[in-house]
Image (tube, rainbow, N blue to C red; front, side, top):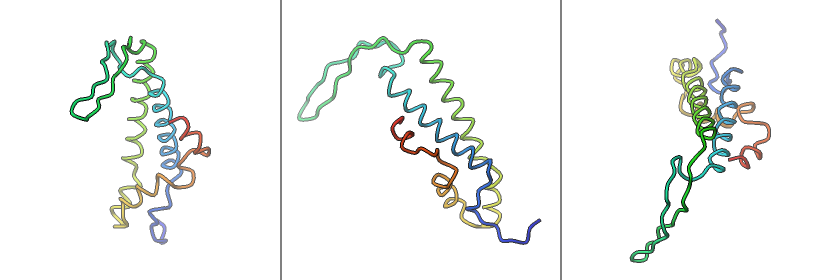
Length: 128
């Protein structure tokens, strides 16, 4: 075991890779959601209403999602949950707790760490 002090912001490569993968999955999911009809199931929609000064936007009728769209959405969500569990349950967080070095701050810092976000952050924002 090393005698050097534990640095909670010295993230292991596999944790950085998992966080980058998670960020990319979120971007893919949001890009897919932007293309999908507003309802998964067929729905007749409703008219826009204004009642006592409050406006309720309407929704157009939709045929819902195709079977392929629903399968892709479900696949992305399942993959996202799996990768999120890898990030959330990584042994690095146990070391942070044991060292008393601010696990919460380290978890927040991971989201912005070099190597933890896709290289082209603009593409992620655009896709989302």
